[in-house]
Figure 1 (cartoon, one colour):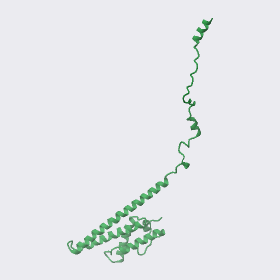
Figure 2 (figure 1 turned 30 degrees about the vertical axis):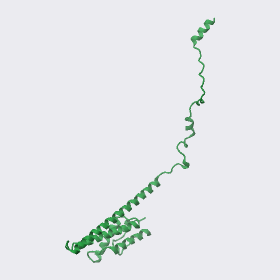
Figure 3 (figure 1 turned 90 degrees about the vertical axis):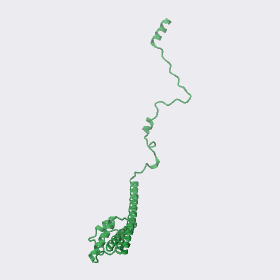
Figure 4 (figure 1 turned 120 degrees about the vertical axis):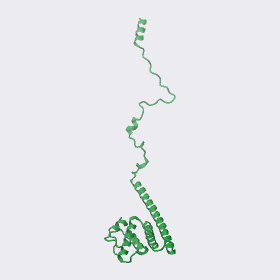
Length: 202
């Protein structure tokens, strides 16, 4: 499936007003359109008001958005909030520098700048947490699919041994029954004793 990053760099130009991604999956196309339209509606005005200034503002915003690699609708929503908060923070800082630091407008703009920075950091942290969780689930699913199946029928290694192995494991002679003592074999007389017994008999 084509992602937002690939779709973005498949565009011929970076003008969000005129160019659209090509050869895209319908679901990814919908997320891309939502991202573009939301950024265009929520971004602060650029320093200049010419069409070129607006195009540069749009290109910078979408470039930052796709660099975060959002993979689903929830990640796209957090990405939009992060990019928009950063853009408004930069705009507030630019306006604040045009007023004395101790003036009421200067203090108010700096307070708004700090608030946008905190909001952007919070959305960025949530996005990273969501992406790490998604990658962890994908890794777990991939490891489960690569695990080889166990032996069918629940047989273990002993039940799969060959008959020859079972015969070789038997003792050479069967053990004697309990309580029964095998009689010792009769001892044959030695040759010297046999000769002596024969001489006495003569």
